[in-house]
Structures are given as C-alpha cells and as structure tokens.
Length: 139
Image (tube, rainbow, N blue to C red):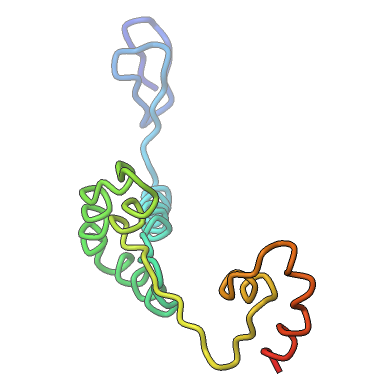
C-alpha cells in the first residue's frame, strides 16, 4: 500500500496523480480492447450514405470504414466543404448535397384525376363535369 502527500492510503497499482479527489486504476487489456472496438463501431455507424446509394453500396462503405478507417474521411470532407446548409434555395441546397433526382413515369403509371385536370387546364367548376373524360382517358 502506498500513500500520497495527504496521508490517504492507495490500493496497490493505483495512483491519484497528486489530486486527492481521484483514484486511477490501471486499465485491463479487456477494457482497452472494448474501448477500441467501441470507437471502430461508432466510426462505422457514422458513415455517410450518398443520396440514391443502393443498400449493398452502403454496406460495403461500412465494411471499408471498419477495415480502413481513413477511407471515410473523403466523404466527410466532401460533405463539409459542399456547404449544402448554406444554399439560398431548397433546390440549391439539394444540388450542393448531391440529392437531385429525375422522376420518370413508366407505362404502368396511371395519372390521378388531379394530375389529369391540371395538365388539361380544367377549371375547378368544370372538374366534376369532366370525370367521364378522365375515366375514358385512363382506360
């Protein structure tokens, strides 16, 4: 047993580094391992996904982040330096973040009555009279 300058007896292997309010125990190898594994998992959990990225691509990004932690730095810097948060409009913000997409309708898509009436220029009053025209157009 050792004692410090205040007369407090410390258990063997401990230290208080001159501060009588703390007691420091030596770290076990299992605690060090858990610390590093926890940091690796936390790093992998914060990997950024790219808008529109398939799930398998994101999975591989996580695997690469676990095996090669420095790889994810590029994505982080790209996200920071894009300054997406400071876009003047929502469209500019999305463009800076790389989140723009194009919606293409397939042959199986059926327009709603609202879309039909807007594209045909129907007024609110004539909308109900043109229900039959809509039904004929979608058949």
